[in-house]
Length: 128
Image (cartoon, rainbow, N blue to C red; front, top):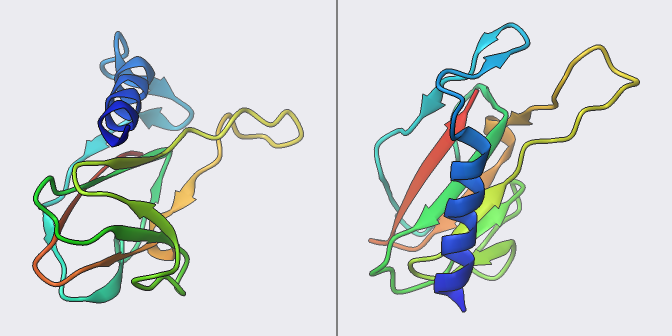
């Protein structure tokens, strides 16, 4: 089941970006960012110290011994959205809101945390 979810997240990511290189967006082109893999030390860490993203994908290492938990600053080993080893969590693009003068909302990367067990890994990818 987790393999199917991971594949679906990857397909959604590809559909969101395929044929759009680079994507013309409000304020410029969308830039894909893939920072270095993060190795956990048993604490909650921010996805990034600052910045925003139009969408975000969090992938747990396939050999992780514990689930990764993602959410707000209160995530812990037992709190947050769990990602099993080899699985992924996709934060999709936010839909257009005609009440605002922007075409898309953004995720604030400094407000998204993931609890990563000691020695386990996570890979983030986002577009902004």
